[in-house]
Image (cartoon, rainbow, N blue to C red; front, side, top):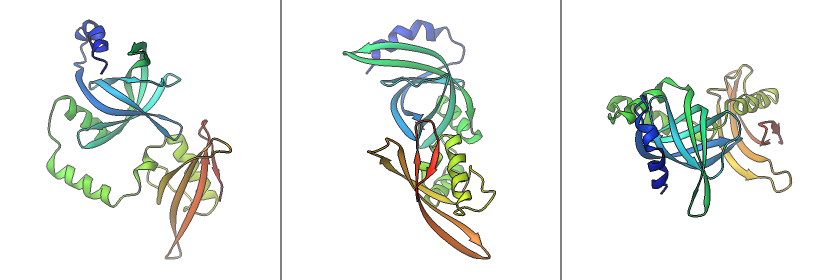
Length: 217
């Protein structure tokens, strides 16, 4: 798919000094609490090129990439948009440079670009940790939504005061879109320690397209 698009950009890409690797990889960009599927076409240690049927708005976008056996999240600064047609379907090519990425995820990008294997001990530790960690769904939310979600649960007494949005004691699942309001619905199981006793809570929250979070129950 999109082979002619790659040819169209080939001359321009050959002149680049960032050594982009032409390799297909799964990628999605984040819209509110939703992941929009796209197709990764090129990747380098500076950024990526991907094709999407629904183009993100704004100058920045969060993306989630599957690189080998690792899921990598990054924030991109969009430097180019190229609308194209493929078999009567409108696509947009998005080129972006990394603006925010965790150190471990950056290491994974470098290994993927240089075709290096995952360190065995580190990979085993990460897999073991993931098997006992909270749902990945929370970590896929934009940071501002994470912060507002945690703040809502803290205000309701369902998370401990001062809980860090980066690693709160919760598990989250996506419950679909409200047919009445169109907002995204989230189901959250949270817990907090009170005088040595662990309390558990089940909550339903709504998130609108602007990232505003409401605790429904």
